[in-house]
Figure 1: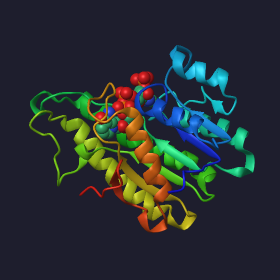
Figure 2: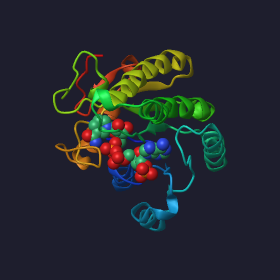
Figure 3: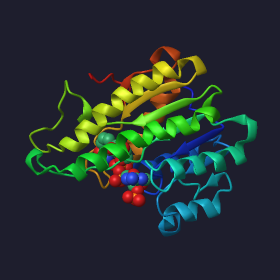
Length: 240
Ligand code: NDP
């Protein structure tokens, strides 16, 4: 299968976990993107990403948005990306940043529900809106979702209830479907991807490397007909 080839990509939450994994994979490609925009909350404190940016002139860090659900910071980030790309547009937007509060249903609070929804659902909505003008050229938008948001599967309920997380990802799945319908006329392919249960700060057993490699392979195989799908890192369809 042909390897994914993109001219420009933006990854949110790129300082650690899967986000950093995506950046490392893009940099290692035989034909790396001309521009990789890596966003994180505290660029100065993120040594690994900073070291990569020193070594690779195509990796641009520090473009924000600081908070994925902050409209002002997202608009500033979009303006900065536009300055770099000019008329060429952004090919791939990966809404990866996400959070989880490991709690039982009874312990969930207004703050947990709100903060998790803002980060995991509203963030990707605002990112899509702000970057739409840049994405309008044969582009794709990927929302990193979770099988935890699948109502049909209710994956691992016995060991983790994480209701605020499940609700935010179920809503993200619906958002992905809505984006796929609304952005179809612009030729933008939108998908929700479950990365597997990955060894990062959010949990164990697929490796970051294996998950990212798998997701990029899945992305390289997608076409127009797949827009609006909810797939895992191996390309399997996940029930809503
Ligand atoms: P990590 O916890 O390792 O990294 C999360 C990233 O998101 C960090 O860069 C973090 O920034 C950033 N982030 C969190 N909240 C915000 C915010 N409000 N604004 C900006 N950035 C924010 O997570 P993973 O790499 O494991 O997860 C990445 C994505 O994959 C998430 O969407 C997650 O839900 C999803 N996923 C992960 C699974 C897993 O097994 N790991 C399974 C299923 C889905 P900072 O360093 O500043 O906190």
